[in-house]
Amino acid sequence: MRRGSWRRRLWLAFGGLAVSLTGCGTRPAAVTRRPPPGNIAAGRALYERACSYCHGVDGQGGVRLDAPALWGPNSAIATMQRRDLADFIRMNMPLQAVHGIQPGSLSRTQADNLAAFLLHQNHRG
Ligand code: HEC
Image 1 (cartoon, rainbow, N blue to C red):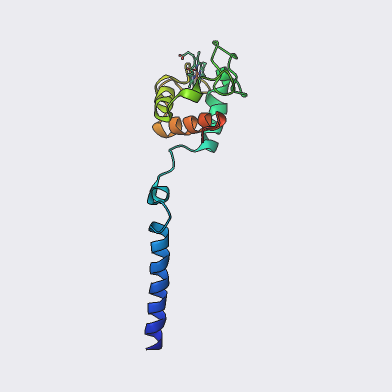
Image 2 (cartoon, rainbow, N blue to C red):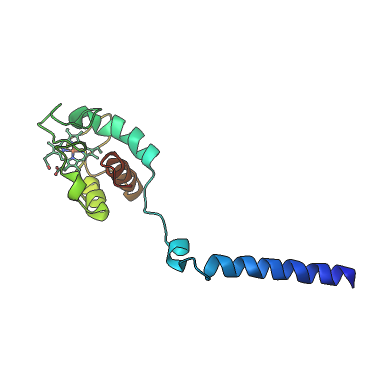
């Protein structure tokens, strides 16, 4: 008997927690929304290896082939959608082979990581 009532109290407490997490003032959308794809730290490491060669370690471009700035006041990335940016990178970059990384060889995950890093550098998440 004592054991049973202890369990019931636990269930009530658990139920209350579930209600407070899913309803009652909190917005469910905020709880269920998935974070955007991409790992910023992994993107940074890959950027330094495959992108800084032309775009510069400081992202200001102009190191080789007149590559444009990717962050800072001269960057066009600030207006690009995350998905478009990741697709552009995957299909076009690096423009030439760098440290054994061939053009068109990046995976979706790598492109997502690079996009996440570039958006982070542009103060967009
Ligand atoms: C061999 C030089 C080179 C390398 C390496 C390189 N890029 Fe580029 N990148 C360019 C040039 C040149 C352009 C501009 C011409 C173009 O858009 O095709 C450019 C354009 C871009 C743009 C479009 C910017 C804009 O303002 O439209 C993005 C984004 C970009 N590169 C990301 C990357 C990423 C991420 C990497 C690393 C995986 C990378 N690039 C590696 C040369 C390079």
